[in-house]
Length: 181
Image (cartoon, rainbow, N blue to C red; front, side):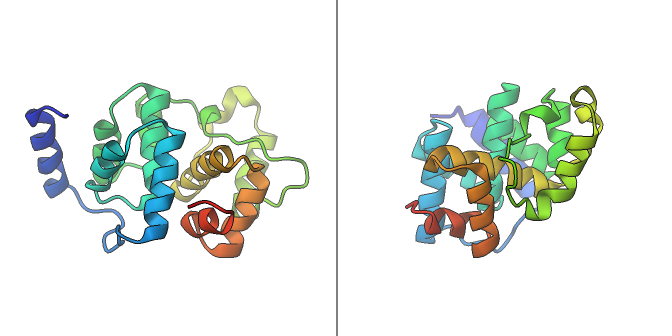
């Protein structure tokens, strides 16, 4: 159970910050199955995932909240509050000392990279020691974390997950199509 001060802080920030992804529904079965898988991947209970949903971030950004929180060793509330204040995922990760290499996913040779193709060209042409100079878009950040989560959850290669995302129009639909839920 969270202390009352944390709950009040969460409520105040939720009211004061602009809502990212407003209008997204949270009760859909596919979203619930997806979020349960995310919770299992990060070894957090359903209650923690429910609390994260209260921040009203898009469901596909919740794995990023957990990823940054775990990798940087900070609270999910701090990550979510920064995102709701409009900070980019790259900025949030950098603020909390998380290197770009942490978000990089190894795709097999010949894997179709779709929208991630230009980012991976930057990775390939930049020495690993300089990856922190790369600017990763929010969309790419969300994609890389979700590929990692679904690949790990479903035991599938990252390239197959990414192809399913392109085929089905998003990570939640891809999770369902790949046998999740």
